[in-house]
Image 1: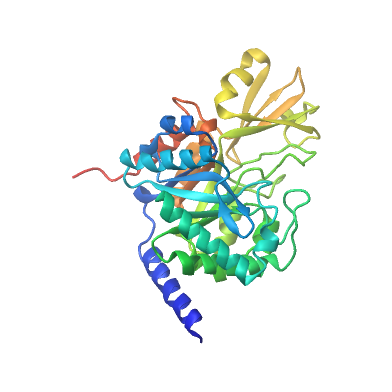
Image 2: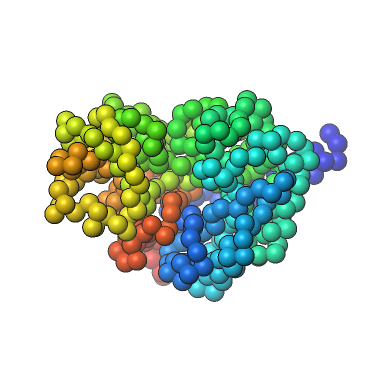
Length: 371
């Protein structure tokens, strides 16, 4: 074993010791918000109800991570300033996103590319006084954004990337990554056992499980599977735990938006019917866009623990999360002793009485009472 591998092994042992010795407790579940907004949006963030905010997104320029423009730099600075309201809050930077990782397969295919990237991540965190990195490469080894390069070697390269990041960042900074919540990603994109000790958490994107490419409706962010739809939050969690991953590294995803289909027949109130994807709808638009007065009827799937709605007059169907599904997801997170819950995206929430409030309400039930 050479010096480089010895150092890396020591770092990984330190990480393992710091993250796995204490079991996840209900009161300490993480609540992570992805933030894709402007500096003007920062003041409205309820920092006291969050443990993590992930700024989305930064991108590659050559081999290095780069902030795209001065406004993004100012926004990151303002997010870090939220620690004055919540000193325990962690602010992470994020690479990529859907359509934002065009050169990832090439850059991360070489040792130099990975090392240059890891060093730039360290430098940016030191400059902004942020707390780590979230890798949102959609996706290693399998098809993601149309036209983006992918191949089997991405799987090993992703492992080497994560290990290089941990060696560069040490134990001072956090590492997480956004993982597809569907079976093909779980099977083919990641060498789970080789990287799990090096990351603080896995952010499972257990939304878009029925996406804009689907010609059949369904639940896009269900908690449980049913006879018509295998993909679900619980399906992904159980798959990874059965593989041997620790529950206290897993974060489930929730959606602060809905997905709407058009030309959907009324059979089964539009659920699992043919249709054409129409648009996404942010949660703060639901009251007006999905009102009963506009012809919408709302339903609850008690097996999947997921809401949906159908407009018979316009033949529209929508799948989404709401306060009820958020509550059962938080309870699931607590009962399964998972690391926490995350969501896309905080600027889609209502200013009052929104989904973050629903998350916090349930979390408070499990907080130990002061002695």
